[in-house]
Image (tube, rainbow, N blue to C red):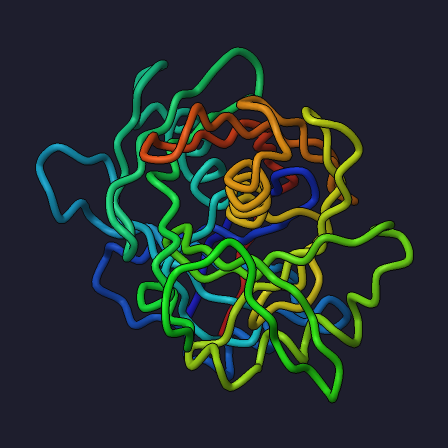
Length: 276
């Protein structure tokens, strides 16, 4: 089976995007893992599959698969890349684009150059909606990880996130604490673990260990989750620059109950095809 794909990235968070609307079988989880290998395959954090719209008021339905082959609900930078690609192909006019995903509708705005904003919806802090094993909603939860107590915030951005404040993202134990939190039994569907360093009320640094992909150079839903958790705690303003290892993103969230917006670059690296 031949797959024609477009390799894209948003602040270093990289994807392959391919058409799955022609009725052909999708690659298996094993095939996706092989394609995701950065030495022997194409290499990507997530694979985005474009399907025919399931609603008349949308341009596309997209699905998201991690580099370990698992399917997930949402991807902020991936949504921005899909919108940019539709615009590049002439399948969506400049301005508003409405897309559909396993987590629901996503509204996008293609701006000048390669900048794309997406509406990531209202952050959901209810533990059962992540899902997360907790008796009630709280600003902070104590998690027992390997015999040590870790304080986290928890929120769903269409996918589950645990947010940990650290003194320095450079020194944060992302490689060890990240996978331990990702697979913690209180998160039955696993969780993305974000390590946030608050620089000031409008700037943070962020590293995210993504479930099914490991640490990525940027994470769009992770950026939204970090801002939502820390703004709810009263530590951040409505507009925040998020500095990831792969570049900068901007998150805007006026107040709880409002939709949160993610803005940043969405770029094409190259196009190709592969036999699987």
